[in-house]
Length: 346
Image (cartoon, rainbow, N blue to C red; front, top):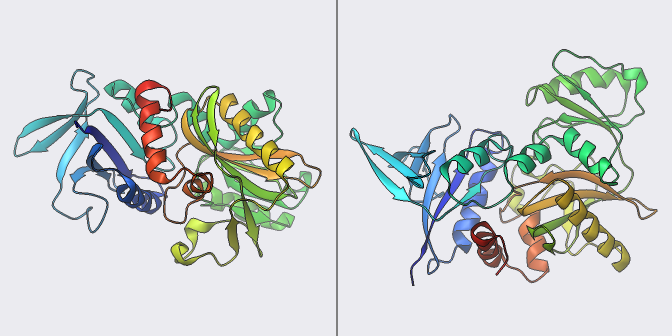
């Protein structure tokens, strides 16, 4: 059996670098060696690309070869650089296990489009749109999907604290994993929260807090052919959900537990899954994504955000939701590869 040559990108330059490495390690554990020949491309925090044996160990400082993804579609793969010469490695498909900036925002997807190599996940447009929470809200609203009330603050703007209804959440408009997010309960806290968010993005989003349960839904597929994982619910003891910033998230969170399947009525579960599919389609997503939402007491579903390449770590929500629906991560990978190569789930 001829194995597919899969380029697996991980690491990256965003603040979610270490999360990406953990996701890649979990992918490595679930990648079928009889089906795939993996080529591990680690991207350091400084942006250097390295062809290495895998995401384990000290790959950033280990014995790796410099490598680039060729934008020439005739090459259709990698160029390894060594001792003044280069070697080409043709790839069948790329799995970009990257989170945050330069991974989920359309930048990497643009390079992959130029390369001519099929890749797993959302395209340039849907990646960029979903990454910018304010733009995603505008599109969702136009499709009849509820969102929080929100305001944006660009680099040269200020906001009058008196015009807001508290509490609000202040966050970078184009970041993930709760980096730079602050819950603001009083007017005097707002300027500091805006400056914290600006450490991660020049565009800041301020949104009214939604009194509701925080829920999520994993989606896999293209167009009308979508599979929804089980819905989860984030049970909070205090504060807000920020799992990747815990000291040891593998052993649990100090303030949250993901309940999978969510302990909500069946009618609500179906409503959440259909709302997630509607958001996914409205934003033009493909391949896979996790749609985070709020479920209010009156049954209304409100969009929170969309992760176009969600975490795949041992403690991440997406693989847990899919596993609860009977689809283990190994099968998620198989189906995602099929979607990238054929546009359909096999």
